[in-house]
Amino acid sequence: MENSPDAAKTDELKKKDAASSKSRLVAVMLCLFFGWAGGHRFYTEKTGTALIMLFSMGGFGLWWFLDLVMLSTGNFRDKNELAISQWTK
Image (cartoon, rainbow, N blue to C red; front, side, top):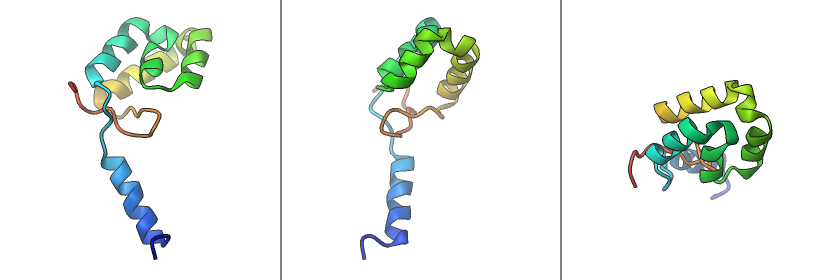
């Protein structure tokens, strides 16, 4: 019964509501000053996309700006898909 669609949906909702241990303030500051190099993505352990940002100068500025907005509004997620919503640890 644990593999039922309802159990999967419940697990998905728990994961969606869970908060990351990463600090939103640190992520925003890294994005603000080192976003063009993917600094905030390295911090959130999204190494693959961080490297792409590094070599494309923050996605030519657009990707950097979108990440800054998402971080500021609390909609950015870490590598484990946990919301980075807490301003302090």
